[in-house]
Length: 136
Image (tube, rainbow, N blue to C red):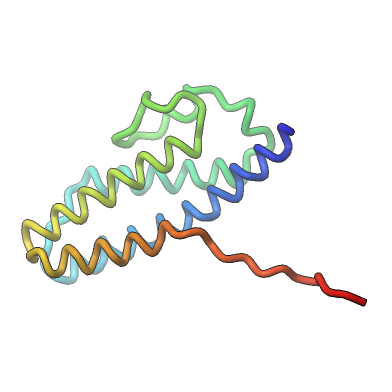
């Protein structure tokens, strides 16, 4: 049962890595539109990326202590215990909200709604294809 939970967590972290990539690209898009992206967003992005790498590579996620996770700066420090997937999700949702609010303030509601749709798609489940499955 524990193995399934670890596998599920690692799969979730793969999905969250995709979301991170989308949000990182959004910051680039906003910068190219002349928006001054606050430094705390970059801090949270770096923190989330480090936690995603930890989640994907740590051999025994159940052995992670809250301090192992909280050592990474971000807006969600101390709120999620040792649940690394929850912490990453919190960081990414906060980043998403801040970017959309910033886009709304500086580029208007039409651009912000477009951005919101783009980030919404990133949160959709990753479709995986089965390899090597077939009937003889």
